[in-house]
Image (cartoon, rainbow, N blue to C red; front, side, top):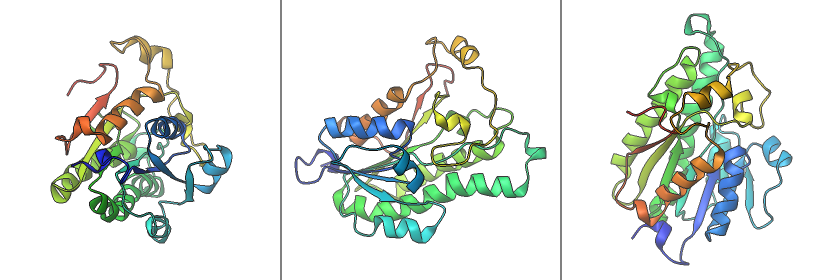
Length: 249
């Protein structure tokens, strides 16, 4: 039986990036649904956004392998793990992207996801749980100016599918691919110094979206909770695109 549906035996959910715009709402919704939440995030993010008192918080920087290993060391069996961590790349063409910027974005979004997944998997195997990675529509629908970030998210989608095959049948691994959300993420990411990202015209994006608006965090939280729960018990290696119909693979 899916670890996320084992009654009171195991309802532990680890959320990486829990203090971010999506993470705070996911944390609140998860508590409402009876999850025992462990919130992992950068120290600056956890300090800036107070999470509910019943949530255990763990400071972690996914850029440091030892940090990630230490954060998961005593977490115990997991029914679920959600990886929300990541940050946007500076908006510029690949031809004008420095190697340092490219390496930083790939490391922070793909290498960090690998380290977190690798650390979480033993606990998910123990709890027969489910993993959900948060990718991006850019991982499959590339747009100019976001090359390193799009490449990292395409890599995360591939990583998700490979992990789904290798971790089955004990652990399910899926992803969501959101479109633009108006959160601090557009300005680089929570807990980080703001970087120069694209001047996105949110009204234009909304007008070009069949459902007539841009996404809000709640739009992403619902699919994440679905993938964690018993309703998705026969789903693994899949990507749910959350974009109001703007991209239909």
